[in-house]
Amino acid sequence: MKRIHKQLLTAGILVFGGGGAGLYTLYEKVKTPEERLLALRESQRLFRFGRADVARGVLETTTGTVAFEVVGADEYRLTQPVAWPGDPKAFASLLDSMAGTIMDRVLTEDADDEQLRRAGLDRPASTLRVELRDGQTHTMHIGRLNKLVDRYPVTDGDKKIIGFVATTGVWNFERPVDDFRSKQVFATIPDRVTEVRVTDGAGEPKYSLSREDNGW
Image 1 (cartoon, rainbow, N blue to C red):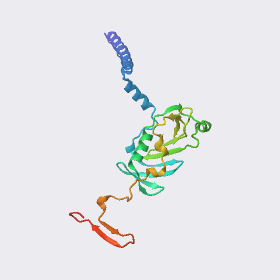
Image 2 (image 1 turned 120 degrees about the vertical axis):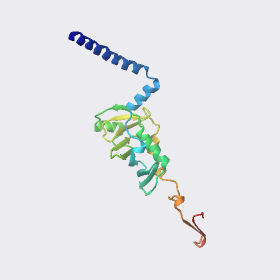
Image 3 (image 1 turned 90 degrees about the horizontal axis):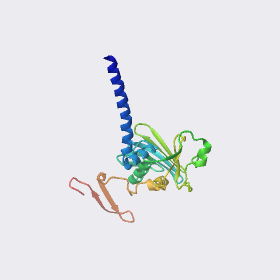
Image 4 (image 1 turned 120 degrees about the horizontal axis):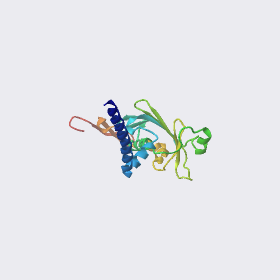
């Protein structure tokens, strides 16, 4: 009786084990093209974070350096080159481009100095470093456009992998520094204003407004 039980158990393992492998193979085959593309892109992602995870960062480009802090939901503040509110759309686009980077890898784990030089990553044109809310840091280096393949060389902070990214989105890293500054003339919130004074060209007062409970 025991021998029969053992034989049945062994047969069950073989059947179900083989069936499991078969089901996995079948599942892979029946994936839609969209699902296979999504899985491929996920495997090619350089980073695993989202814009909402970022606490602060520094962008270094050929046009200058921009340092910033995230002060609220889609609220940014420049700390370099000037202390000023940041442009929400510019920073959102920049961080989304970094977090969503899809890279075709050329060297995967052990690039040396000569290979970095040949790829143009020994002196990258743009570097973005971000610190996440959980304390992790990520760095992305982008070289100049490789005209032979019409792609940009990239690597991360360890500089051990080299890959290429499409031209789409790289313009975010090449913006003039001033693009990241809010275009507000006055960096204030209207609801916080309690008094307005108006003067003429000579500085003489013309009139003033004061906020009261029922309005101005």
